[in-house]
Image (cartoon, rainbow, N blue to C red; front, top):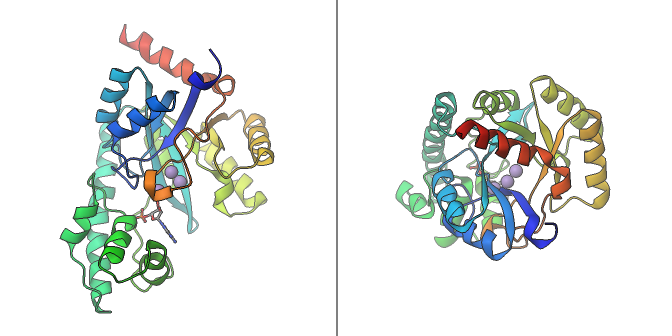
Length: 287
Ligand code: AMP
Ligand code: MN
Ligand code: MN
Ligand code: MN
């Protein structure tokens, strides 16, 4: 059945990274908004997948294991989405643990740098904001705001923890090729997230896409809130020319991205046969 009931949103963040709704709340919202299929794609963590899946099964929503890896290539931040991977894959789990631990060390470095400017916050302050166990700068920005050091979180990034801020500390980061490899070896599919936001320019973006393809990239996120119709047509063509799959979603972050609602951008069902194919593969594997 087409229409409202067939909405598919493959890009959602929960409290396990920097969203404001728990995995279970996200599934409730998905139900209220008539979504048929969803993927939770938290930044560098799969902590929300277990409770998300459980709730999705209760409410009859198709649930896809997802993740959004933050990666770096030539100093540019590139996000790689992974879908349908085995969340118990040992290499994947080890890498995620390393990335998580590195964030703790980074938070401590940020606290030290801030203290040099008489901005005193503690790890406990930060942990109060963290609902999963992945520390993000979003949480640190909230502490700076709540303690009155900045007028809003934007200022926290501009003055302190953003790339040009005085207390900036980069995070341990993998390159996009490693992310693709990890997803692939865990049996999943990898997609380049929101390519238009890369700010690489057309030529460099295409070079990057071709290099990612050589490493086994499966698709491109083509349906995204800030993409105009022309952008969608463009990226669909780029994908088709390379035999890549299409994906998309709202990049919902709850109250941390107020202007975006769940399912606001969704994937046209007829353009994503790979989803049904994967579900069938999994079903057949079970029987
Ligand atoms: P982290 O993964 O800890 O480096 O934090 C990245 C998160 O910080 C992103 O997902 C954004 O939500 C947020 N962020 C990064 N830069 C800014 C900025 N300039 N203003 C507001 N939020 C930002
Ligand atoms: Mn985010
Ligand atoms: Mn992203
Ligand atoms: Mn995202």
